[in-house]
Length: 366
Image 1 (tube, rainbow, N blue to C red):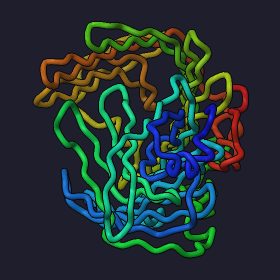
Image 2 (cartoon, rainbow, N blue to C red):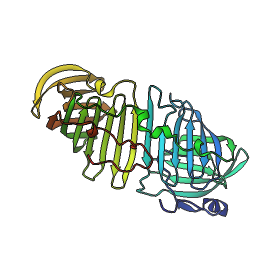
Image 3 (cartoon, rainbow, N blue to C red):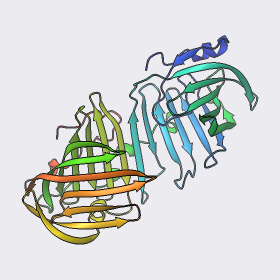
Image 4 (tube, rainbow, N blue to C red):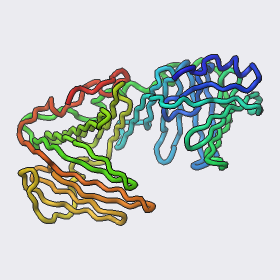
């Protein structure tokens, strides 16, 4: 992020139209680098109409969406200095919980252009800024001290999102009101991640995988280790990007890592056991793959199919699945090339204890 728009306030006051480069952390919308501490309530009148609360303290900003799309208190928290952002719902102790983490990777700086349009909202004078994105255009009406009091997003010429301030407070904000809660970063709060020794199933399988989407096929090699109700999946792309998934009971953690470190984490706690659910279906013929006997399990649905060849201890040795949506075909073809059983220990499937910490930046070797 170069020229992070610091000094924005002077630019707003200056008058002539100017452009600056600034990339917000992923998912956050209502923030510029320089702003006084504040709390703003915004009314969104498009899509699913609702109110959101924007809370700002220094480099930290939090956007709270009460009762948004069936989730109570969806939260987006970002640090504008580090480029980190977190999205989560209100309680990981409930039946379901979600957490997404992203770290900004700048490939193309976005130019913020000051326009000659002004407005007055709740008695606040503001100047409109415009940002051209790849798929849409954004406009922000910005006060002299960095408050976004109106926001619009356009797809073509159509207004996709319209938000306008209905309450503004300039006041000191506690860091606890903007930073993500510490409980999100404790792995133990997301389930039991310690596998027991001498537990079944106990296996490691390596698969050749192929994914076809929009007539383009990507291929890679993936290794899966499972010990009891704990599983780890690992793959490395040709460009060096690492994809790793940890599963335990009702919780799955997916991570992506490039040369700079971890840049995306997704955590989801579901209502039932993930690994057991994935083995359900109608049993069909048997086959021998990688020296192991497996049974094909069939799941057909309205828009596609899913066939898996599964061993007696739930190892998936082959997959053939397809899905059609809006005339777009999505197809998977996997086949095991090697299989081992009985050699894994708890440490082979256990994630690092500080995996979800904001300072954790690199996965251990697989």
